[in-house]
Image 1 (cartoon, rainbow, N blue to C red):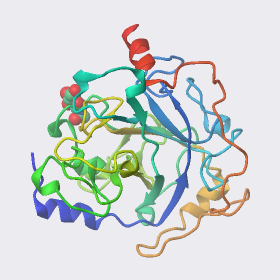
Image 2 (image 1 turned 30 degrees about the horizontal axis):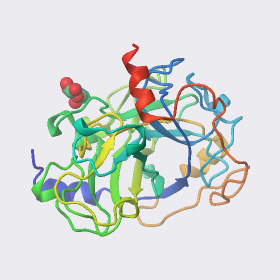
Image 3 (image 1 turned 60 degrees about the vertical axis):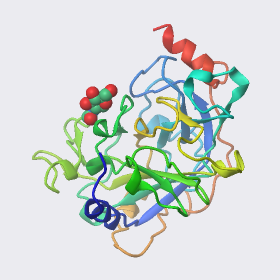
Image 4 (image 1 turned 180 degrees about the vertical axis):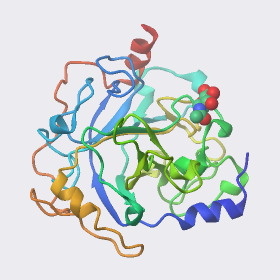
Length: 316
Ligand SMILES: *[C@@H]1O[C@H](CO)[C@@H](O)[C@H](O)[C@H]1NC(C)=O
């Protein structure tokens, strides 16, 4: 399915950032505390934010005891995304030569944007968590771009989305980074925070009984040209831990709220459609940077090796 240009432009127009926070990856591991709490059986995820996260689903208070990998000391949320790997010199998944052929692609930039804050009624509730995207998506029809905005493109061109499914990775060599975006639900039922939804799936409003929250958007930029400077033509030699080579359909993300409430009050003030605002709090300025040295709290548990994680998934 190719989305028409009109729809594409409409989607582009709503991408107005009010504030964003940049994060460094501090852990790669086969855990997913939301989908598989307490277990080492997930595909590989990259973790950003509070290093208090382990295989067990943390509360907001748990996360706030950790060290943030992001630049804002008031945001101890956990952000996690599907790991991407570069299969060196191998065009398809079926020709895997061994563990050393898999190279981790560490995002050059991982940013979390908060959007449509002017429409938010409440801050993120304590212990709120959400998943965006579809980890089992295998085609464009399994992807809902209208809600998640999921699309891959070349940050600085060339633009080839008109010639391919928009959630596939680019079929042309990007002049710079490969970029992907993903939006999170913007409505939650306060009496049952596991119930969340997208306004985009409900005529632009929250379903009755739900309140509107700021909309989180992941924006990830991968500097793949540094890994294979000659580029590619057709399917790029990149694979998400959840999917097939060159496919971006299964890209998904997790968010677990670790915002301190005093800073969330400031987050809710970032309502300008045009002006970026820094979100400060009692723990420091929003761009103070991280100095605490975030790290994996349980380095001996689970695995950070792709093929080992595939074996561990088969055991279930
Ligand atoms: C997610 O992908 C699966 C295919 O594995 C599909 O059956 C399912 O409908 C998709 N879910 C959504 C919400 O689109």
